[in-house]
Image (cartoon, rainbow, N blue to C red; front, side, top):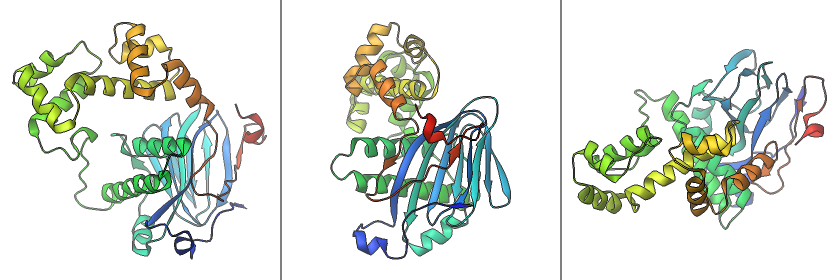
Length: 313
């Protein structure tokens, strides 16, 4: 069994001066090709693996856990584990490694049982934001990454331990205006259809002018801007995880022409969709170290027994 290199958790919190109960070490998007596997190993920190697509198996100690879309596996410290993709298609994951300095939090987190369902994509979206912040490395990015991870950890605890566990759709979290919530939920269900402010207002039962003003006051966005941002967010998920052409993605998220889609995408993301997709794919199987000095050991091997690091794309 391999033992992965990392930190001694005992006194790193004080040494680094990070006022956070958690600390993100590393994150990556990792696509395991069919029959690739990770050799058995253990480490002194926690790990979250969020499955985006494909099928495979995770083994934690003596327990085998089936992997499929929207499944999260939490690996506690010092537990021997391995992962393997099945023979049908790539296993696409988001993978992060992190420390927990608060003993009570670590104890509760250690009792979380895998697998954990992520049908509302809460974990996926939080890990994607951590990965984006880690790639951009703007000011205070480590603090933001830790805050996002803490939110993820608390969600995992709440969804698996507390009774009853209540998970709200992302659209209604922190919203207090029931009319705005109703409009948001309608948009999220029908975003790919030919809808506009009049369609949304008709569903909610108010005039377009009144709803637009109320929506803007609550969210800071117009109905149209919110719809565009949601469509682009859905398009980014498709460009990241699905083998679709840009034209197919444009139509699937509700744009009538690829020209309109490309213009809206660039307005929001700063780059055209093709360039954004190329940049995203270039980051597959690339280490993003959040904590300086952390060394991640890639123990992935191909179906032929070759180190995956030798066949990176």
